[in-house]
Image 1 (cartoon, one colour):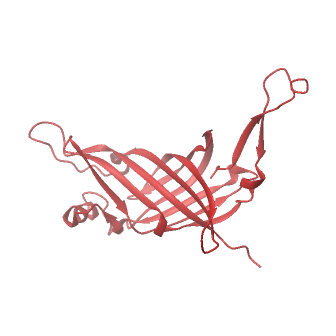
Image 2 (image 1 turned 180 degrees about the vertical axis):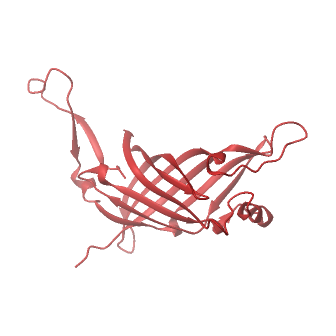
Length: 211
């Protein structure tokens, strides 16, 4: 992901061209984070929120997934991200509702056991805010998805592992991926909104350098 680019205006006015010059320079401290990372599910979460009966929200999450980041501090555009989510790990807190979500009405988990994301591009929006774009595949349908995220920094944990963290969000129309089940309400409207809000809170651990 393009997490590490920083911009600053060229300082001496007499040496800069007439137009404002903006230089993209690598911050040595951030560039040191370059490397391969594995997402840590024990300290991460992937969730969703959908409007129910037009009046409230239902929230859920996925408990099992694997993901990897390759961060390039010198050339952020070469950074990448990928994740595989096990659909059967969906959890909304209600077993019957989870069973319905796993059925052919929704995810059809038996036929399509994974949801995947593969990044294709990333850009800095402002400060520590970024946007990553990629392909989201669900029910064998692949559509582009843009995720707005914020880089939360880096740290070395008590076990000596180097970590990076970020949180992000996105909105999708579930019908774009073939999740069209719904039911009409007697008072008008429908049981579930088409719009789904996705949320991500990710901690990733840097791979140890090879000897």
